[in-house]
Image (cartoon, rainbow, N blue to C red):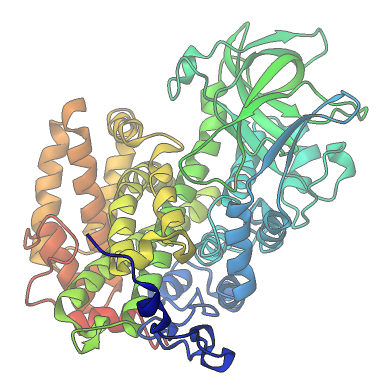
Length: 569
């Protein structure tokens, strides 16, 4: 027990100090900040040799100056703050106005509109479809790879607008009206008559609660009105992102079967179409982007393509958005690698910068290999898309299978990659203001949207079974690297044998091997030898562990890192 002091003892205690001696005014020595990195911004998000080389190689070298300019803007302190604020202040659903009228509007923070305005102006929405220059779609993808360093959510409406154009072309009379507005570079967020606006955004409504990816089980109905091509819809969609868009491509059951329809939010007479937003989804990530459950009740819609051919009509839209999922995963990898490289360059441990520690260098180099492989494949897919829409049948077949392969594999690698990059920052990366938790929450989304892993793996099997030219196109691509690396040659031979007897159970295994062989073939042809050699040794040769940071001793870590993180402060 501690005794209370006696009076004489208390009188002998030290007296309060004068104000000049107050501890609150002493130098705050314990609060000196050391061994912490400076802010990354401003930086150049386009400072990536794999991206710029791929841009030139795939026919869009003419866009390099614009991509570099956008990369500087994406890495600016202002644009980075837009991304942070758009996620901190999430969209809010307003179902009614003050007088009780149903309005179904979503309100966004001004930062969201700054991001959207830039994305549309820089051609990340529908603009490439109005650009006759070869490589226009590659230029858009490269721009997305740098502008995506800001944040991912606003990429969703830009992506759907881009993807809506080829689907809408199945109905030429509608395309004539709406395509010039969907390909515009002007952003106008107000809900008003579409044809009175300088530019439009498009969304899509496919999935329903009872079916998800199995869209043929949709229960939303479409009833002819008697006017040619005009129907009324009744039903409930389960996951419709960006409900503030001007028009939507929607699947519904017409008398002739599942069909595709164009649904405007505002009708030609200025009245609001019935588009009742029941709620916004409370999502793991992608929180800047509103995702909703809209209800249709006598909602006016215009038929796109023939009745009963809804999936075939809208599948071109899905092919485009799948490419954007690959692009967004590659962007996320690159962004988090840059963050990890910056932190480790400026953070010391055990007497040396973290980036100088051998084991950390192994981790960063392994991440760099994965990032370059993802970026290189993304740009190759964009090149195939660009040439396919210009009439190249071989590229169309390659695009058909390679996009599904890339969508499966690159988006699957994203979560593990982002977790490892976050760990490079340690506890600093686990707190919200580092930005890394936002990236980590975003990573799983890209594997789920536009068909989960199983859906894409099965789509590859379907293509191989029904469209024999797709396999021929894939092996023709792989043959371009024949003889350059024995490990790749062995992998391609084994792939051909495996492809002949794979059923659903082995679909993921097959598609993974297809993706790795395709990535390796591109790196062998285009990347520096240390990059290609390390990738083939680990991803194809088996000289690798089960986590990042397990590259073999022979890997040239210095060369890999110098390419991936050139001259960063």
